[in-house]
Length: 477
Ligand code: GDG
Image (cartoon, rainbow, N blue to C red):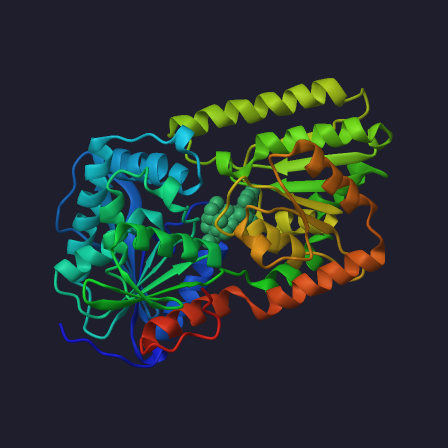
């Protein structure tokens, strides 16, 4: 197919991701923030959103594709077999790539069967997708499930612009090299024209991996030559819809559910944590840090509530079953040891709560505690900041290992492995003067207002469409 270069808005956009939020088929939670943003990109360009339907069957028709045209967007999905889901999704994606990219070799599970399935399913998906592609399309592939998609499309003759964005961290070579088929994964990544990471550190780690494996020649900042083609690598930190959060949170403060909850606190201060139940989020360590805070500040017992909202996630993966029990046990122990007849220190919700309620809770909390052991970005940190009241903003306590720490320097930055240090961060946050809270919050909010999720996809797609060597305004690395 011929290759065309042009301004991003002139080209049709094809988004590829493991799951596709087909309208009408979405889960109870509706479309998440990222889905809304990518839909906005697709509406502007017109195009296709391609991926797995989320359904697994014992056997499927190799040529079947389910297409739903909604306005300018064609949502094109395919089912996968139960075996594919087991091996490609639950297996290689979530038990090999996810733990390794989050520096957890101790939790990684490698199997030749799952590794083979990962490449096989990407090939299977590419064969279906290539039928929908037109010359001149901008193809934007998302996340760790889909690394080989670019090279599979190239092998099937697609010569247009191909971009990849990794939502999770890319580790240093010492860790990344533990992955099965490490060299092949790296080489597959160089089939893209633009490879986007969340932070300059991820981009740099990736560059080190390429260099050590001798897979690409470094041409200059953010540019490589591999397989006879030029590849651009950079940081494109994802943002949120800052305005939407600000407005929703201001309204949500008055929701009956939020008001009832706040009234149960009486004079107590509130600290909030919100995370999918995932070992990368450091929930267990966070509870230990909260206990260390109560040990160091016994006068605060009875005066603070820590609310942890933790929807279940990937419950079919053994490591996630285990963490579910660990966190529940840890909450029980802490409440049993520190609680009194009239005070429950930790309120734990192991379920998904409505989006608007969440924004109201963010706004009601004096402290937002976001302490992942490793996180690509962490949107909760940004959502917490955007939801604060300008007159009386809360304080974000943020792990140095969240990608968000590269941008949110108004947060109290902590090392989540250090319970005593995190406890002092919590104490500092609760004690902070209004003037300092306002100053820190305003700086972060200014950043979030100028680096929204729409800025993120525009910047990536402009870079992808340009392809002339001039780095985009937002691309760093
Ligand atoms: C991956 C990367 C990167 C959570 N609980 C509830 C709820 N949520 C929403 C939050 C937030 C989202 O889920 C979680 O996003 P994060 O960014 O914090 O984390 P991951 O799910 O691990 O996302 C991450 C992200 O991709 C984007 O690139 O930042 O590093 O790991 O939006 O608000 N929403 C509702 N109820 C809940 O109970 N409604």
